Length: 155
Image 1 (spheres, rainbow, N blue to C red):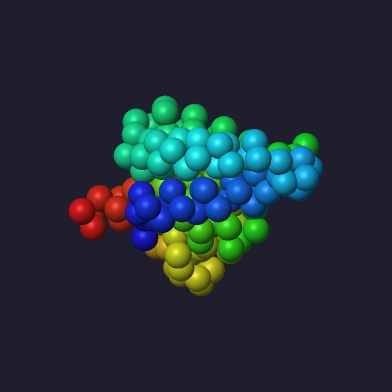
Image 2 (image 1 turned 90 degrees about the vertical axis):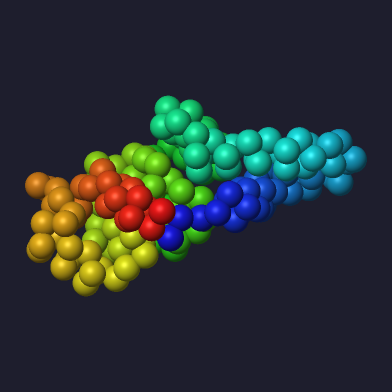
């Protein structure tokens, strides 16, 4: 199920607090300069959530990629744990871009993205409802397309 605007906003605010602002506050020994940043983040995050949930594709992908590269920096490809896909941000990413750095995903990841079991993914692949990747797993774009199709049926 697609996250609501409020769920996504609150989740992003928590992630920014945990990954960016709290460490900065520790580094600055509790300096008061962090409080105005929290207010700016709260305001901007509402706008980002709106873009991710209902903005045009290009703008949504831009916000998603900036958020991922900022919140999850690393030298390797973005490879979040399976539970991440069940979070409001993970669900929004799955619907807007699929997996942002992988052409194919494992059945377990596809299941987390879809909110079903690995066996459910296997069944969908067997019935040609999800596209198998030639090198194994499921095509990320196929998972995204299924999520979009399901979202349109619920509306």
